Image (cartoon, rainbow, N blue to C red; front, side):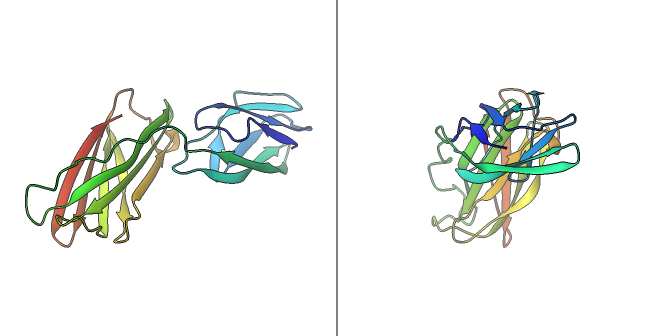
Amino acid sequence: MTADAPNPVTPGAELTIQGFGFGSGVTATWHGQSLPIRSATADTIHTQAPAVIGTTTDAVIVQSDGKSMTGPLLTITAGGPTTPTIPTTPPTTPGSLRLLFKTAKRYSARQLGLQVSVQDDRGSFVAAQVTGTVGSLRLDTRASTANGVPATWTLTPAQGSLPPYPATVSVTATADGRSGTASITI
């Protein structure tokens, strides 16, 4: 492998992997994510950049005819605005939790990313278990931390069929007998 173009690239954009010796049944991965092969020749693979939560750099790995090839580093930028945090006012019930969407973005019809932090009614981050749905697709339970690190999901068809545009994202957090919910449409 000799190059990835463009580099850097934004999620969902067309990506060309250049090199030589690509054979039949070629597959490609980047940062542990399978890349959809749109077309391939002996020296070019056309694919799509995957979703990322934050700008990430890693090498593309191509498997072809039983051989593994590692390419140069490829940077995929988070790009674009994130969804504003919601709700913007404290919870109305004392002791309840506030969920903040740090990111709720559909990168393409086949990929979306979510980041949800949890605060108490005083505005302090809390460690919580967060779960929810995107349309009819159930989200695995993830943890947010007391230092503000959000529960994070990058959803691709491997987790199930993504709902069509627009989709409602609903999340619920629980911590120490407290709970809170939030939703947004993406």
